[in-house]
Image (cartoon, rainbow over all chains, first blue to last red):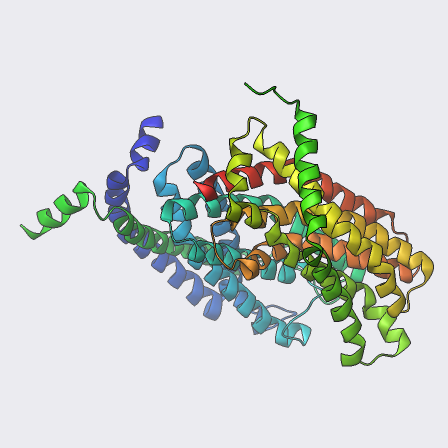
Amino acid sequence: MWIFLHKMASPKYFYRLASSMIPWLFISGLLLMVYGIINGLFYAPSDYQQGDAFRIIYVHVPAAYISMMAYSLMAFAAFIGLIWRIKIAHAVIVSAAPLGAWFTFLALLTGSLWGRPMWGTWWEWGDPRLTSELLMLFLYLGYMALRASIPSITKADKLSAILILIGAINIPIIHYSVEWWTSLHQGSTLLKSGGPSIAAPMLYPLLASIIGLSLFFGSLLLVRTKAEVLKREKHSRWIKDMILGDEV
Amino acid sequence: MPKKLSLIAGFMAMFRRDLLQSIKSPSQLLNPLIFFIMITATFPFAVNAEKAQLVQIGPGIIWIMAILSYLLTLHHLYLDDAEDGCLDYIMLSPQPLPLLVLAKICAHWISSGLPLIIISPIIGIIYQMQVDTILVMIGTLFFGTFALSLVGSIGASLTISINNSNILVSLLVLPIMMPVLIFGARTIELYQSGATTMPGLYFLGAYCMFALSFSPFASAAALRIGTD
């Protein structure tokens, strides 16, 4: 295990491993997504309350899930990068941030598209998940703004990692305060989660699209991290060897 | 070989120096306060200034404007010292940096937070608050501004190496400050509608303690990284 982790810390090894993993992640993610979306949109029975409008969960729930997973991943990488000073971890954070922000935005967008027919409004301040997702988007944007305004890469890496960690310990507080705020506000009569149980023909496509989109996210992340590693290690020997080796 | 100072003496020296410095530049001290008064007094011109409505929106506006005018003061926290080189000496001192950072935060709260609390009753009166509501507002601002100093210190230290970082600090600090804003403004509002205030004040106090536990260390780490 330790040997594996040490190898992962070397940009060269990471680059090779990522290159070999990308096609697998991409293809399996795509297959699962196609299965999930087709089954979810065409074959799953429509909900007895929401009719066909519930079908947006096959896009919305995976996006929301990934928006949170991406931030946890960044926090984990920030921890590793700050404590063990592993450069790859910082490259992962840089690559994950725009993806995470984008999925957060997608989750908000699809959520409000669903809210329009269901709640009768595009935006409902009474829903804690909606508002804490918005604050999550602000955290992503703050990270990217800080990152963009520090010219030195190593300095930007460390400072933004501190910001990520501060944000990570604040996320539960933000979430619960938003929840308490709304529970002080009004009982959420409109907003029930999709019911305590979900029928199997609805569930499997949902699981498939969550896992599929996660794998897809993983492949995108690795592609971006590879590019970031190339940018950061552009003067190193192994890249030169690799490129020359390819040409011969 | 100079005599080694105790931790408390180091804290007090830093604290006194920062306080003296802020007293000696009154415009830095007063401008955010004037901004706070002006901007909160402008709102009733822009919205319908009927009494019931002012009572309703008052707590939210006072809290948002308190945070905004507070954010304007944050960049003095470390930037002035970084520009004239004092910060390097502060970091070279044998005292632990988180302790000195905490002293700076406390001095900043006294010079920025306390005056804001002291003038806040005037704003409360403009917004038609009752005397007891004003007391509740002072209570929430007391904890809230201290939490702002603590969290703002992280934002100010993260952006120490950046020019014109004012807007950036706000972008970083605002989402993290959201719980304080929510509980600060809601507590006043709930009190006006007859509910108890203690849970909100407890929460704000707890948030302060929590921020106190990590802010000096995070700020110190960010200062070390930012200035090397």
